[in-house]
Length: 253
Image (cartoon, rainbow, N blue to C red; front, side):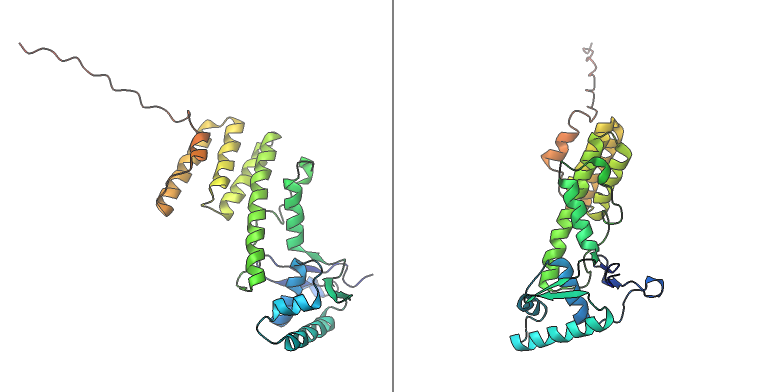
């Protein structure tokens, strides 16, 4: 069996590398940070050239020194997890059998956003709602990818809530919508997803409660009001205040 067939790399909520054959599936914790950065980069980028990898990981040193650091990192990695990285035609890539949680997240999100994907194939709780990419890492390539994944996840959760509601699966729909709210509490489109699910199910009071909770949160945190889009969702639902009847004045005698 391929030694990398059951290797799993985790980049969400921190770096982990779990190769097969280790007691209890224990993660490799003693990899130098430079080696971790190499594995992480290859987990995020498909098949970069050696020059691109060296330049991304060691941008502040001469090119020759960067390539030397890359060779050292590859050698160290080969000693710990043989065959994890494939070198072909001057390019580097993770072996075909390696699983990466970020790739699974991206595949799940693309499936959710594809209207042709059957609804029953969309729920993947392990990669949907959770995880920030490599928290505490501040490399430029990590920061850019972190924001891209954040946006992809949020749009997917909101879209999933809508698709589940359209399919009449309101309980799952509201869970997906609230997962988006938990991830980004001040994101209005996530709160709109919650309101829409309640409205689709006919829970008008719940929709109004969610709307007013967001309105209060937004005012407390930012001092602003919801957008016209949010207001429009509940237009006509808010009870109108009845006019107070005026008493006719009795003419003085």
